[in-house]
Image (spheres, rainbow, N blue to C red):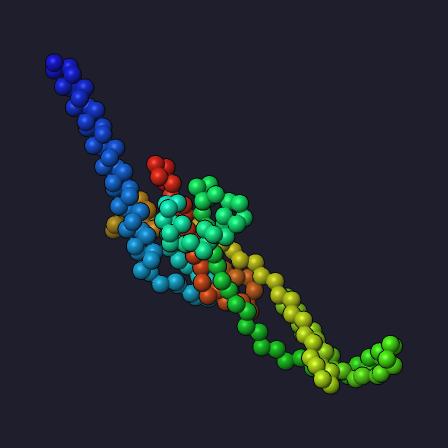
Amino acid sequence: MKKYLFIYAVIATAVIIIGGRGIWSEKERLRQNNEALTQSLSLYRTKADKSAAEVDILQLRCREFERLRAEDAKHLRAMGIKIRRLESSAKSVNKSEIAIKAPTTDTVIVKETIRITDTVKVFCWRDSWVKIDGQIGSDSVYCRVESTDTLHQRVWRVPRKFLFFRYGTKAIRQQIVCSNPHNKVVYTEFIKIDKAGKRR
């Protein structure tokens, strides 16, 4: 009888420990999500004068993702991606602001079909990231803009601190940095899909 009571006590203790770990893990996930949702997006410029943004990562389960990010879930389904197979979802928005001053030159264009000669002003401006060229005619303006940018994305764990000790995970944070100095990050989001029963 004592043998069965001992086995029962061991099994009950194991169930309590495993259940307690699951509850603590879920509590931590919800706490981190709460902090990520209440924290505002941190926008700043790096030492190299490049636009950057930092935000804590949301950890959502598949059903939470479908409910809270319904539009993103709809796009994924349209692409043939099942939400249960999704590992993470990231989204960033940046905008370009460029003020240019370019000299214009007169150019004569002869239109052979109708035999009309038109004088237009031509301009061109470029740097390492943006190229702008165009024509100013008597009744219209033509302009072409080419812009390139590389977004550098980094994801890391922020440890908890107590005195001089660092332990555990306080939050998971994402940083986005633009290479193009004309661009500015205005929004960024990173969602990690936390599958039920899967250890982080």
